[in-house]
Each structure stands twice: as structure tokens, then as C-alpha cells.
Length: 322
Figure 1 (tube, helix red, strand yellow):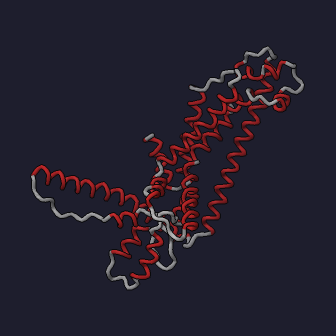
Figure 2 (tube, rainbow, N blue to C red):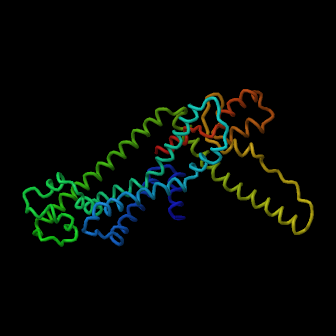
Figure 3 (cartoon, rainbow, N blue to C red):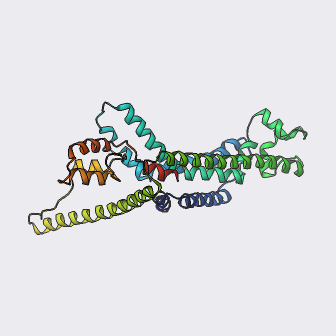
């Protein structure tokens, strides 16, 4: 799980086709190993259930895992039940769903890759479809063949049927070809969907192309430094407290951000055309910690909207779509 977290974090931090491609490639490799080592079609009435479980359940597990190891998921849900309802509930709900949709987009990389590779491979689909108890589909596969074909279709993947080998190979070839067609259609649909979402995100960009590049670079640097400073400050505070305890002396003075400050910088960011801030941290520092700000009152009003945890920044949107 740590390795999967590392790879997914690389993809989410870089937000490039290469990063997402790495996740897809590792998922595809895992599916190939899983298919060759673990999967064994039972060639019985359990074919459909067995094949479907191997096709979909790992994808579902990867989707849940993608949600669990995404920092944005916990950033969105932490403290959600304790927040006070506001007058703009509909707007906040729509913004929440928008953020959750973007998180889902990132989490879907691995499960979609699993299903696509599994369909191209054809083993799971072949096992499942030969156990499908639908007369119309069986007649489609066994058209022009012996009457026992429909009854013994579930035995074809194991080669245990009394049907001639040539007929079995033809039926399995049909099933595999259908599986591969579905796999390519899935890949084409996801690719076109990603292209469309990227175009829409770029079209709605509130900033120019070069400024967007700067914004992303800043967001990445701020995130890395924030993680570093959190670890350093926590270590310093722990050392101070432990030292004070063992030496039985009053603790040294140390400044730590208040709860309200943590809440403000933990929210999702919404770009404002009035104030060119690049993150909630940037907005908080300029608004609440800079006494020279002449427009502090009006800016605080905008920052209050920014602190809404369900508001999404365009830079997150654009990064997620690439």
C-alpha cells in the first residue's frame, strides 16, 4: 500500500500524463500477474460470478484505496459533520460535489486501467460469459454447432467439453474478441472524456497559460514546504515539552498557529479576480498577518468565502484534468 501511495502521490503532484500513465502501467502489470497466478476459472455454474468478481471487485478495491490515500479526500471530509450550515447551502453542496468529482477522477485511474487491461486480456470476461445463463447469448455463441454446445459452454475454458476442439476454439475466440472490443471502447471513451474535461478546464481558466504554469509551480512548492515545516515545528514542540518535563522547568515560549488559522489554510481555494492570491495560505498571510494591507476589511470578506472548505481552486481543477 505504501508503494501504491507513493506512485499515486507522484501522479497527483506532477499532474502529468506521465504520472497517470505510471499508475496505469503498474496496475496493468499487477493485473497480468494476478491473472496468471491467482485466477482459475471453475468451469461450472460459478463461471459468471467468479469471472465478474475478478473483473470488478479488484477495480472497486482500487477505487476505495484511491480515495483513502488521497490527501484531498480527507481535506474535504475532515470536520465536515461539525461545520455549521450556512445560508448558501445549495452553492456549498454543488461545490462539495465538484471537489468530490475531481477526487474521483484521480482515484479512477487505477480501477479503469484494471478493467481495460482485463478486458483486453479476456480471461475474466471469457470465464464470466461462458457461465452466463442467457439463452439468447448462448444461441449466439453456439449458432450452427452441436446441440450440446449450449449445455457444455461453461466447460469450454478448461477444455473439458465433448465438443470438438475446433468448435471450442471458435467460440472462445468470439468471446475474447468481444472482450477486447469492449476494452478498446473503454479506453477510447476514457481518453476522449479526459480530453474533453481538459479542454473545458482550460477554457474556464481565470488566468493565462504562463500564469497557470507559475500557479502550479507555486502550489507544488508551497505543499512541499508546508509538509516540511509541519514536521519541523511538531518536532520542535515535542522536544520543548519533553525537555521541560524531564528537567521540571517552565517551557520556553513558542508560537503555534491557532485552531482558526489551521482551519483557514486547510480549506480548498477559490481564485478571486480582486485579489491575486495563489492559495488559502497565501490569502491568509496577506489578509490576516499583514498590517499594511489598506483593503483589509474588504479582503477579509473575500477570504471568508475562500475559507469555505467546499470551494475548489481552478489550479486543482486544471491539474486534475491533465
